[in-house]
Image (cartoon, rainbow, N blue to C red):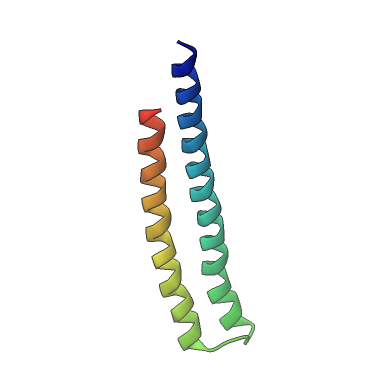
Length: 78
């Protein structure tokens, strides 16, 4: 009986770690997204790099969504 509690606790910890990683990636993605507009506005870079940053932000959002789905599945299994 004690063993099942340990395994379940480990799975919960793993699910929590995955969800924290998704949250951290989302925060970083938002900061990168905001930097595109601010960088162009303040003259740090031109239009082409700003749109490249926006495109990278979309890719990051896709990764965050996938990690979020994995975290949701892991929390349901745990």
